[in-house]
Image 1 (cartoon, rainbow, N blue to C red):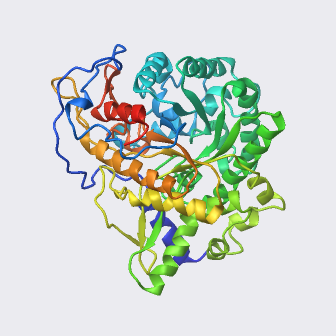
Image 2 (tube, rainbow, N blue to C red; image 1 turned 180 degrees about the vertical axis):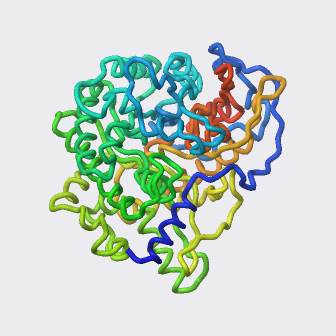
Length: 499
């Protein structure tokens, strides 16, 4: 790997990282109405405001989604559950990372988070009252296998069985993610995702879940955002396990992809008719100017951001330009064995797409900012990027069914004296991105569902609790839930099945 490649990889990781909350922010107006909500969202939590009192809030009915379209919201285990030392749960890399001084903002950890482990029933009632049709959550690997191997922890399985049963009782379809970054620390001590064996341990863990919960879960997602593990965990180092090693990073990318494929094969071996696919965060990459150099640099950037993961899963090959850039002696190139790409490209039933921001790439391979940013200064607000990435996947890879499993933004939300949270900027963001998704559907993209990130304010990784992404405000000292204005607006979108 050349020094130039190393510099660009580290630069790319820094730009992709969830940086400090110093962005320009969204400047939007609007005041919260104070009328009481008539029905719903009154499950021991504050109800907030009624979108019908503000004519700019409610869906206008102009953009209807297909019949059967599923509206949902998403969370992940370490970000919401808490209870990190209860009922036999083992240590994860994020327990270790967040408890290491200087790793997270304010020294925050997920030890309590949104206390969903104890409050899941109330949270399920909130989902029901929002009208959610789908809930995308993740399962904590160390809660199922405390050391990453062996017999499952029955108390951990029982928690997720109660959660899944509660979803079905409320008419909400479960969508379970097998791995959302919380690798058991014991496996990390044995090399983590640098160790090829971890991919096989992951497949064994997946099979335990298929057999323990599979008859109740219609959709499984394998690995959440492998690119984030690669870039933020192994290039930039501000996510667990906290390394800065480009050679290790792309070996990790291969083993994550291998783990995905092995998990798909494990589901097929059970004879289950459940659907399965990966969850990829995809970023459209545009040349920053009209030069041929910027076009070439943008193409390579896209290779690292998107095609490395899409091509291996959907075409059975890694992009030649990325492999050439890494070099034939890279740890990734040397780590690819005969038959690996066949496993990685095992047929999937759907692809989960997560969209947050575009990149504009200069002739030198750097990036520039073209659009206003959110509180997360890495996130440019560009709804057309949603349309571009959805249509690109369909155009380049065929009509694989798609689901949006994350889309949202952070704001410095505050609880007003009247007990409401006015996050009108989030409403604008969601409306514009949903409209872009609708345009993609109109143009032939087989999009089945859309999930807002996130259901609840939660532990935002290296940013701790400084950024709030939720539809539901969480008052962390009391764990009181308060539906924000965006939650009430979203309820109306779901009722109308459109905007």
